[in-house]
Amino acid sequence: MKVTIVGAGNVGATCADAIAYRSIASEIVLLDIREGFAEGKALDIMQCATNTGYNTRVSGVTNDYSKTANSDVVVITSGIPRKPGMTREELIGINAGIVKSVAESLLQHSPNAIFVIVSNPMDTMTYLAFKSLGLPKNRIIGMGGALDSSRFRTYLSLALDKPANDISAMVIGGHGDTTMIPLTRLASYNGIPVSQFLSQEQLDKVAADTMVGGATLTALLGTSAWYAPGASVAYLVDSILNNQRKMIACSVFVEGEYGQNDICIGVPCIIGKNGVEEIVDIKLNDAEKALFSKSADAVRSMNDALNT
Ligand code: NAI
Image (cartoon, rainbow, N blue to C red; front, side, top):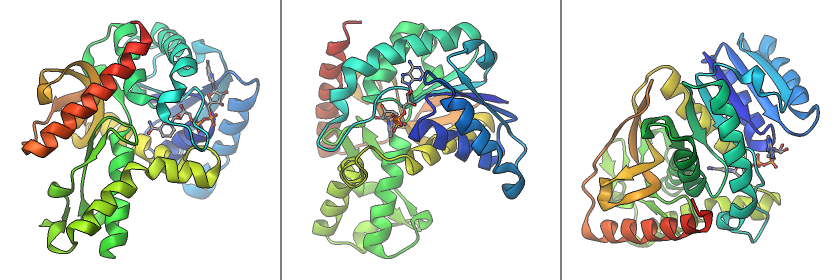
């Protein structure tokens, strides 16, 4: 299986590293516009192989899309990240041009690939890719919910003082500080609702920390995060390449699901060899439905800036 990652920066290179560690692809191609940069990152990652036990071939190229030919999955991380104080939405002007041209070049060489969109504002970039490529909706997946859900599980794990892997929880809605919806009502620790262990005040704090999880890291690091984003992409790509059919919150084009149309927004999806195999219909309560509708309005108004 072949995976191409465009953008060999913090997130893209970490994706390549995390995918290689999982031994799920025979070949990874990293592509960047910066001369020699992807080549350098790829060589560095390849030199981990003997000490970690994987045999994935990792190569880097400068803007040569012919080397990405016949990829099974392509991941788009190219574009600028946010700086402290910026919202993801402020990146739209620059990143829209980059994502559109990168997506079109990738499709020319990998007509059967499944697209994973990471560049921000991710829901809008996913919508842009969907509209400009004309592919079936199952082949365009925005990665945001996997990361936000892992941040949610981390904050729950800290509040509960229990291992994050024993906690099940999901974030749906838009991938923005004010648009994401951590589903605290449905979060559980070993099958037991977390509300059995945490007060409403504690749950509200966990949800608030989750929503600004990316901004907290941006303030600390001076740029946006990369380890958890890279690991989240690898988790998603693993479910595609190995047809694991995991349920992962992903930004996908909705046609009536959750009462919304003509946007890409985070909903629970079964992810397998065809990309989005199914959108899972979770029964939201009235308050959650209202939050989802508000989130969808915000995503929709951001898409208006695209003029698609
Ligand atoms: P970065 O600046 O470290 O890397 C971006 C790379 O893209 C650079 O190496 C740059 O040379 C390359 N690039 C720019 N234009 C290109 C083009 N036309 N073709 C090929 N490569 C090109 O940024 P970082 O931290 O890796 O973030 C990348 C994107 O991912 C940002 O938009 C960021 O906001 C987003 N992001 C999304 C997350 C999510 O959950 N969806 C999580 C974290 C970051």
